[in-house]
Structure formats: C-alpha cells, structure tokens
Image (cartoon, rainbow, N blue to C red; front, side, top):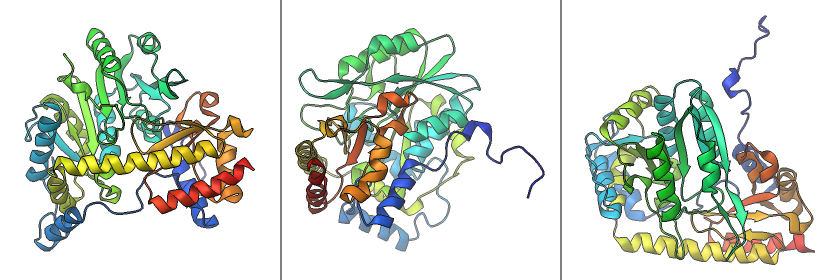
Length: 396
C-alpha cells in the first residue's frame, strides 16, 4: 500500500485502459464465439516464407542481436520494393529502418518528431495506438473526421476543407492512414495531392501508415504520399509484413524516409525495443521479393471474402460500407434498431456467437462513431460462412 495519493499511471495515459481488442478477444474465448474483431488471419502465410524463417534459425542468422537499423538483406529488399512498386528510390543504408511492427514505427516517429504541445492532425476514426503514442510524446491530437457518404456507393470520405481548417500555427504533423483502418477508405490521388499541397504550403511533417498497401480492391489504387511533389523530404512512410504476408506475430515493420528523418526516428526507436525479430527479418526479405502473382492472388482471395461477409451482413440487416481496402467491413447498426455500438458488441457474443469491434473507440467525437461496428474478413471462408449464418439470426 502506497501512502501517495498520486495515481500510478501518468496523466498522459490515464484515458487509455485495456484495449478494446483485448476485451473483445477475451469475450470471444469465454463465450466460444467466432472472433471477427481483432485483425489477424486464422491461417499462416506462404510456406516458403515460413521455411525461410526456419532456415535462418537453423543457420544461426538473427539469433543474436541484429544490426540496429535492421539486417542489410531486409533493408535492401524494402528499398527494392519501394522502387519497384512506386518508383521511390531509397538508400537502404540511410533511408530505411526496420522496427518491431508498424506500431513501434509510429511510436518512434511521434516520440522523435514531436515536442510537448505540438498538434497532430489524425484522420478520425483512427487506430487506437495513434492517440496513445501522441499522448506519450506530449502532443495534442486534433481529429479530422471521415464522414459517411452514399453517392455512388457507401463509403467514408475526407473533407479537405475541414482538414485545411484544422491546421494552426501549432500544427507540427499530419498522421495519415491509407488504406484506412477501420473504414476501408483508400484516399484518391486527388485527395492525396491536396494533402501534399497543404503539407508543403504549411511546412508540415507527415507520417503515413500504409500497412494495408497491398490490400486494395476493385478500382482502388494505393499511392504513397511520398511520391507527390515536395513530399519526399517531409514524409515518414510506415509499413509492415504482418498484413501482407499473414505473419502478424512476427512483428516486422519498417520506416522509409529521407536520411534526416530516419536518423531522428532511429534515435527514439533504439531506446524502445533496440532490435527485434532477428530471424524473421531474413524471411521477410524473401517475402518482399515474391512475384506479382502472390500479391494479385492475395487481393483476389480477400476480395472474395470481403464480398461474402459484406453481402451476408447486408442480408442480416446491417447497412454496409463495402471497403476499398484493408480487411475490415464497417457497418451501421441503426437499421437493426440499435444505436450504441459498444453495447451492441458487448452483447453480440451472447446474441449471435460473433465478436466485432465498436468503432466508437476509434473516435474522439464518440457520438460520431456510436452506430458503427467493424468486422474482420481475414478469416477462412468456412468461418465467415458460419459467422454470416449466426448473424442472420439478428434479422429475426
């Protein structure tokens, strides 16, 4: 028992308790429900990539501390990926940094680039680590809300005027996520060009979370913000292997940026994990060199699963926002006579034997996200079919 009245948790993190993912995953286990909440696949990625990790372990590569910036093979593979996919030239020695997943990359970037009181504009709803990392860095988050639109199809869109109006003299950084979790929105070239123009005009840094870069569907196209005029020297681009290759537990992410930005991020990163995922780095280097047919097959498989779940959810009575990217479907529960997504998700395992995530936890403006619920479709087809069957019971 301490005699101090001061709370153990510092005030910057006081608003953040146990994550919604932990709560809902525990609920899935305790009720035996199908977990369409947390975004991880229920099958492993390519066998040849897994075998590359086994080979690295057996050959003694990465079993001790790897180099701080990442093993040379992976840094070279990341640089080649950026060149081949997007025409972005990266020096693997000075412009690439390997991290413990994208989450550490985001934390290190914000800790490195922010001073206390700096404002960070983020697209709301946003992944929950964004808010926590901004808080740990002493920054001030300023949400700009993606809003539902129904012109030519249901989606969430960015109001560029609202984004511009959110910039003040205290704004230091834009935190952009595309393809966007949880809404599935993929920012268009026109939207990205406007963001780039604003960043250059107001001399802002930009951190872009692009972990779903290969998970885009239909006519959507992922375009890195760093490819736009004036953005190469002010953009920290973040991605990872987990979503693309279905090895989320390996926690291999990376940063690409101009040398000065990478140096800054590395200065913070070295005091977080220092290094991580040694043998897996060699395996991810081989994964990034897989032929285009792998990425095309991945998109086709996930597109079919998206359509299966989205159609099933619509038949169950949800209003569905069919995503252009990621592996999440956002729904509106108001057609079911519901309006409180958090209460709905907490009751859903008992009602239907399925777990989902309430989008309201991704909002500062909680009321804006209250009726929206997110389902993950990165699961086996038979699991999604059973989930749809159970969810249809909600329609009576």
